[in-house]
Every structure is written in C-alpha cells, then in structure tokens.
Image 1 (cartoon, rainbow, N blue to C red):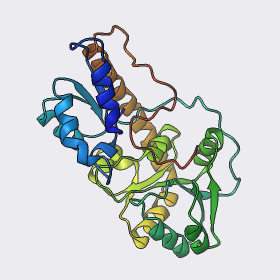
Image 2 (image 1 turned 60 degrees about the horizontal axis):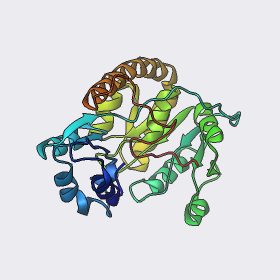
Image 3 (image 1 turned 135 degrees about the vertical axis):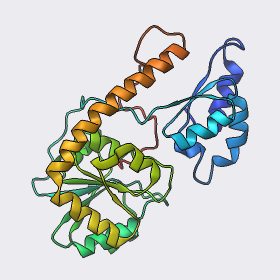
Image 4 (image 1 turned 120 degrees about the vertical axis):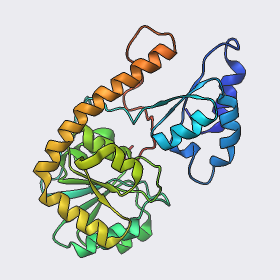
Length: 272
C-alpha cells in the first residue's frame, strides 16, 4: 500500500523471485500533497511491468503511460457489518473532517453561521482555534470508535465531505453511499464522475456550501433513491474489477480478501 514509498522498495527487494507479480495499492497521497509526490517518478519506474490499483481515471492514465497494468477500484463498498451506536435524536448535518490543509474548514464554519437553525456535528479532533470560532449550532464528536462514527453518519440528515484537491476521493462520501445517507461533496471532476446525480456538489466557499446543504436537506428522499440505484451499480462495477484483478494474479477466487474497513483510498472520516 502506497504511500509510504519505502514499502515498495521493501517488497521488491524481498519478493520470492523476479517473476513474482507486485500490485501496488496507490492512494492519492502518491500523486498529491507535499511529502510523497517527489517519489512519483521513481515509483512509476519501479512498478513498470507490475500492476497498480488507483481510485480514478486521472491517476490511472499516469500509471498506464508508465507501462503499469492499472485497475481503477473506487474505495470498495462494504456491507454494513459494524453495528452502529445510537446517534443524536435531533436532525443534523454530519461533517467528516481530518482537519487537513485541503479541507475548507473555515468556509464550513461560515456556512454553519449562515444556517443557524441547522445543527452541524464535526467529527475528529478539532484544533482549538476551530472550536473557539465555531457558532452555537456546531458541536464536536472528537475521535470515536467505529460504531459511534457509523452511528453518527447513519443518524444524520446529510453528510458533508469536502476537499479542495481535484483528484482526491472522499471516504466519508463512500460511507454515505454505503448507508444511503444524502451527501454533499466537492464540485470536482472525479467526485462528479463517481456520484453523478446522486449527490449535491459545493465549491469551497461558505455561500456554495450553505446552498448545497439546504438543497440536500430539501431533496433527501430523492437523493436516497438515487443513492440506492448508484450503490447497486457500483457494487457490480466493483465485482468486475475484483474479478479482473484476481485473473491478473492467477487466482481462481473471485473476491480479493481484505480486512474489513482496510482503506483502498484516501479516508476522510475523522473516526478512530
């Protein structure tokens, strides 16, 4: 799983024979951010003749040009195996955050100010400055165990999952799809291609976020119907990709096993 880049070096150095096939699960951090993209060139050279799993076509095209067999596998949708803890009874918007630089936290806070009648629950461990600047209709869950996180997500009226980076997927948006909760996500090409008409999109401005949240709250029933249809289609697409990956590895099984909840794309959940 990449990053970190040294993991690839370790695998290539210790594989049992030069014909052993290597499959790199390449998260968006390989291509984006400040730390790991400096190793992208050598990563692609070392993977030439091997395979990669990426989360969108933009990243797939980079790998294919480098001579890497590439599988586009959106973060796999899991069945809801984890029981959810009880969520608050009042209606609220669940904001999934890690407080990374690509998240428009200040603009989300301004959107909350513009919607004083709507409750917002921010996930994750919020910096002190964020807590101090939050209006009264914002509360903070802190880091939570998985059942509590899923409970907060399932119990929400809308999930808000935003990034300012063009080619970054949103794990919390995937989880909203898994549990059929209306979602507001970023107005980027990769997210629009994935969710289509099943989500509401916002630019990283307070006005756009506020308008998108209001639209999602108004159209919850229709969004849930579209999410159900999308989930069925995405599960079928997912299985086809897994079948192709299994064939590449020379396996007879049709599902690649992985620990429940193991990430195959950049997460944006703010849980444990």
